[in-house]
Image (cartoon, rainbow, N blue to C red):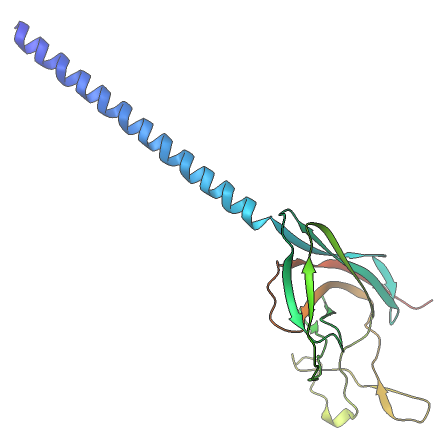
Length: 201
């Protein structure tokens, strides 16, 4: 009877020790996983980018002014883009509430020396200005796809000579202001801004 009880106590003790070891191991693994997740999160936020607008509202066809703001929480300068600065290293476009994107066009140009777009330790700001207008238009009504089509583009406006070569202004509505790089981008995701296009006064 005594031996049976002692044997039972030994089995119970061993089981408790095993359960405690498993719990400690699981806790340790959880802590490692949590620390790894936190480290990845810190690495991901070491460099951030966003668009900041001078004004959130602009009249249709008016000038949109703003800044690209980079926050570099490391001690090293990060090269974000290398390219030709003749026509700019980047541009700003718009996406309407229907998902249509007015993406800027980058012409193919040659240049002797490339420029760098960088994010220095701390805050780096690049200022921009662009028009609240379409980025492409059709010079002939016959060349334009139906407005229900995703390939639809507006008809160009006429200039003083009667030629259709003027980009029409964006219609009234809410738009996402987007960043486009002219070349391979090695920087962070650029958080867009919200722009409200209003009627001309």
